[in-house]
Image 1 (cartoon, helix red, strand yellow):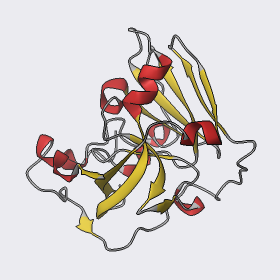
Image 2 (spheres, rainbow, N blue to C red; image 1 turned 90 degrees about the vertical axis):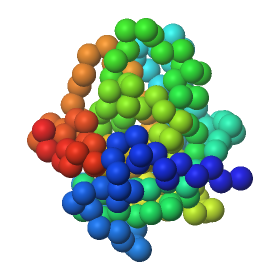
Image 3 (cartoon, rainbow, N blue to C red; image 1 turned 180 degrees about the vertical axis):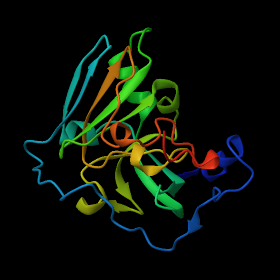
Image 4 (cartoon, rainbow, N blue to C red; image 1 turned 45 degrees about the vertical axis):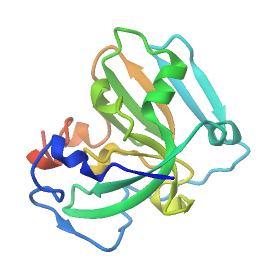
Length: 197
């Protein structure tokens, strides 16, 4: 069953396609560099920082976690929006609960295989629509789109959704990620056009 969460825009604005965006029928590939290589045997997903239970999950162990499929919209900071994307993965709150996040955790830093990082306040991540996604439109997520695992953040610009994610760090103080260090917005709200800090 597919859960439709495309109406979450009502929480942030009046229009499903945020201002400054245009609807695209394509799903372009945009990355800061080359697609990293990985193997099913060596890839793992790690959770650490301000948590009671640090986690290390193999590829198979991650895929065995309870998952959901959601219909979401996807907003790229470069100005295009793809509507009705179907992503399959594990909701962020399920990972946070499994790790037993400390009360003093306030920020999240996502880590990726290519060295990319991106950050968000914990309250912006701890929503069921934020997925650690390994599937898109009924198929495994393609490597160029972030496979084996990426984060999707339908209420934020997509640079907040790290491709090739292999870990999440819970922080007691904010720490900027790759694009945030280069002037991009930490909050990244598409309906307020928060592209740059």
